[in-house]
Image (cartoon, rainbow, N blue to C red; front, side, top):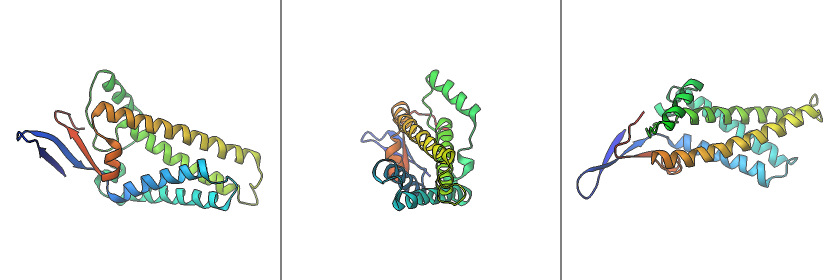
Amino acid sequence: MITVEQTASGRASAREVVVWDPLVRLIHWSLALTILLNGAFVEEESKAHEWIGYVALGLVGLRLVWALFGPAYARFSAFPPSPARAVRHLRAIVRGNRSVHLSHNPLGTLMVYNIWASVIAIGVTGYMMTTITFFGVEWVEEAHEVLFGWLLFSVSLHVAGVAFDTWWSGVNLVRAMINGRKTIPEGRKVQ
């Protein structure tokens, strides 16, 4: 759904596009909260840490299912991973192209899949540490820690990418992830 808002002079000022449904937004912010809690506030070897990890896994699982059955912008088809598209997107930025992507831009798409895969891998190694077979196995514990470090690095890049894209495209992505709507500035091409 694209709507056009009018300025006081009667000219079109921006297009508002509904892109992210309530479930996508709830999963996004809930996953961010689980990462923050387990990374900064909850004791690593506590039951709370374990259960928050399971919640994070469940959120990613729900998001993957929603990517099959949810509305158009929530589906995998709206943001297929493609390193080639990401390279073309980078080249377009270097050339000064400020086009707006209605779903995730190609770099953001790769980051989304990276974060989901990282959370799954952290969850799997975390679960492994609770089993008789892998309890106390050093490589599993190290893998869990390295993966969480990778996730924190990825989240940092994600936040930096959101800040850059907001500045570059003129679309406030944080607001869009709160209210579900991207407000596209006048004159911006939409992809």
